[in-house]
Image 1 (tube, rainbow, N blue to C red):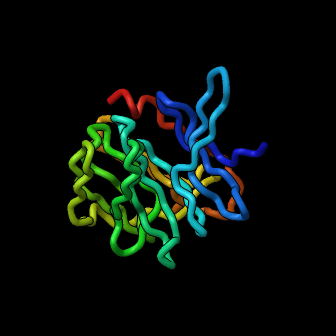
Image 2 (image 1 turned 90 degrees about the horizontal axis):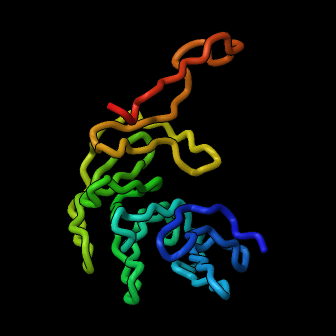
Length: 179
């Protein structure tokens, strides 16, 4: 069976995007003597871009359920409570390494929401970090990532000049995570 894109793995299995009934939903597959597939989010909209919290208790994801893309966080505990994170559109959610902040992109803006991790996720108000994030999602669905140390971002963007010229140089940044 086609499982769609694998978003994240956690101690309980693999979280993936599943094409059920013509829509993409978030699900988890656990493996053992038997394989179990559990729906995490299943609505008549496409859910995607799951980002697992560092403590593996929440998953932030994108859905256009309201009519535009928004970011929500879903408790992976038995309660399955859902908390809105973005308030004016959003996608491409990432957690900070501490689990106390969720980043997301909306158009060309990178936003941040502080959260209190635990059984109840208490999000703050979204704040603008900076503009200039390019909506150049790769097949992974993400156009940026967060440095595990939390003080930098890695962005994908178009070349500033010579965009149509043949590539003659490739710049590779090594060791950006070791700083």
